[in-house]
Image (cartoon, rainbow, N blue to C red; front, side, top):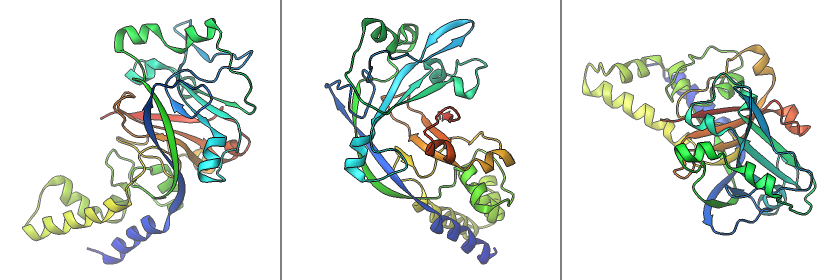
Length: 293
């Protein structure tokens, strides 16, 4: 085994870290329209145009997923890549959560809306009817089982081995095998370790122990903040994005990451946005990736 390759791989994990805003959920009965929360009723100001898409030639309402009160976040953790005021809302196509989205493009699966000014909440009866997809609820139950307040704290993320886009950008053009395992970077630098580990073709107990111990080294760099803003994206399966020159130039940032959460379809979901778009508060080019085990 090339020890220099092992050290190089470890250094990439150690030296690439990002500040993140971690958040957790607390179930509540208070459906406050102004707070950061998952589920419940979103902030609905006057003249709000509810987000919809066209699916099978029919208008379909998106389901409210969560919203972030940016002043709350600022008061808890200080300055971030987001503004210090306003509410950022995430709506999603409920069909996407059960794999029945059809042939829709990525940006048709969800909608992100930024309310710079927070005025009077005015939930008209027509708007309230659009929040929940009755067909989805009838077949699958509530998209989100309850209402959950969100609490925020700052943390540090190290590069994890499933955010392949970030790995490509960090390695600056070096070839990485784009696969479905969670050890892409290890496989890049130490192919002999992964070959032994996945073939289970151990010639002796010593080989097994070496393989196991090396793979264990990298576990401490895996994400300890399952739900977060910014930092690195996490994938249960694989990052499906094509590593094209165009995508690499966009400098994508992990805007929002949900890890498996029993009350919310128990899947990993992340939203990524080009850095320039985030600066300009343009959420039209955000991409979503969701995977379930």
